[in-house]
Image (cartoon, rainbow, N blue to C red; front, side, top):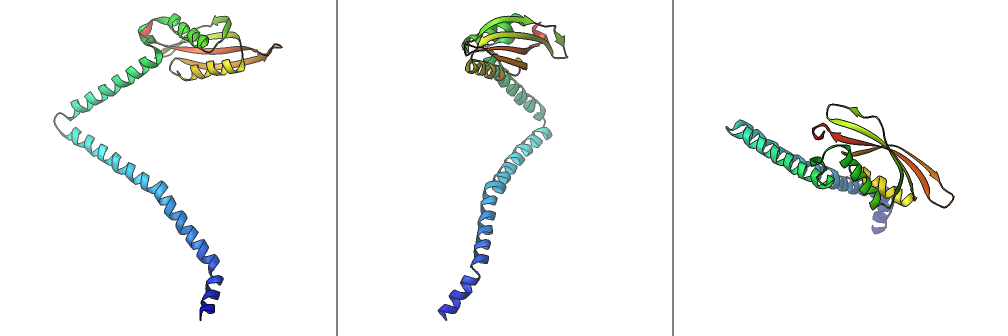
Length: 184
């Protein structure tokens, strides 16, 4: 009797293994993917119902407006911290000073800084500047990384490098400075 049971189990062991693995994968996927989505859905539904309740009340719009103004103020403070309050200074010179300070922090020596023709759009005046520098790969990487951390101020358009015999590099970078029109 026991041998017959063991024979049946050994014949069906592959099916039992596949079924248990599928059941395990289904349980893990539900825990990892579906449950967090449901929790996020409930939280977003609660936020939405709160806003709908505010809209339907008498002073709801004013309260929503004050919340939005608070968030705008927080974002403006965050931008000011990142730029070092550069928005209070005027013009291209402040942005070039920020560019030079980032270069000094990265141990980069400028050979030439050549401003190009400006262009305007509805929000910004765009000042392209060609920077020629003598540096190392590591210092150039630090400099590019520091510029990329402030995409609202600077954008790297082009980068060209040439290796020197002494081990350093000569690099040319076209950087565009985004200056808000209110600063001009």
